[in-house]
Length: 338
Ligand SMILES: NC(=O)c1ccc[n+]([C@@H]2O[C@H](COP(=O)([O-])OP(=O)(O)OC[C@H]3O[C@@H](n4cnc5c(N)ncnc54)[C@H](OP(=O)(O)O)[C@@H]3O)[C@@H](O)[C@H]2O)c1
Image (cartoon, rainbow, N blue to C red):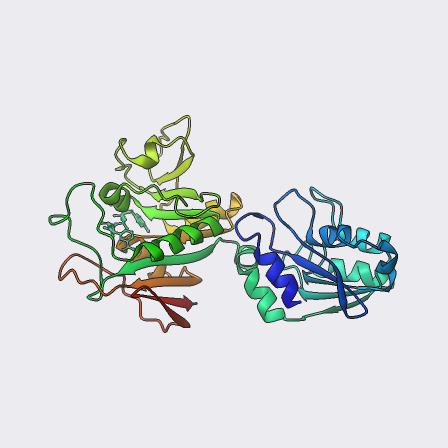
């Protein structure tokens, strides 16, 4: 099962709206096939694992491991339960049961009705954690929320506007830490910032220092203050700008979305409807504090550098205990789970 989780992890960021799934086929204590779901619309993990088995005559004597309950419904591909039946695989071992109420338990029931011996709950905690975005989305009906920011040793996230040179960015963390953030961006469906960050920093919010897909860019701009000369606006990639005006400006590339009322609940309801499964919220202070104060976060990743500013925009107030801390070239990185 651990091998299934390791395989599934390869596709983090590429399978939305689908979950991360890996599968391994074992005959007489030896792995004879394995695979993972690589992209939405492409074959599921079980199908890839079965396809990789050189001698298919061994399948009726083998055990199939998979970290998520096999699907029992027709989506973009045929149900995996059917393929397991067609190849007469007699034993299936599962990590998590599918959280989607339309699916939950049906895959197991179907397999058992055909005489397949099914066990579930193997490495359940680890399997649930791997698909925490998928689980949160289906159970809480909102995206999985990761808060991320960097603060100086004296708790500032940026110099004060009067000190900062126009259009220049003061980097708090090292290049290595920033590259890690670009990797994280490639793993999430969307990235969100408040309009003041766009005005002050003119960010691109891409994965340019890492390979991988850029996340969908979301900006909270209730009063439509974002200047038209920002990179985000000029970029030919769609960004979503959330505002509170009733008259919606139209744009050939970007989407202007009016939230009524303008608050985080309306934002998250909209994201749920759009199947936005995860968001990395990257600031600034007001935006992050809004999510923290309403307890709307699942994970926080906070960099603390050795640099000092003495003055500036304060870091969010966040009195949580870190689950884990690591060090990157002098930056301290702490992970929090809600
Ligand atoms: N160190 C870091 O990790 C980091 C990361 C990002 C940004 N920053 C820094 O943070 C600074 C900006 O921070 P900031 O706190 O001033 O601004 P911000 O959070 O970037 O933007 C705040 C604005 O966004 C809108 N907004 C955000 N959340 C809202 C909500 N829940 N409801 C309604 N409106 C909401 C409001 O716009 P209106 O004002 O129009 O109402 C609000 O004033 C920048 O200078 C940037 O350099 C640092």
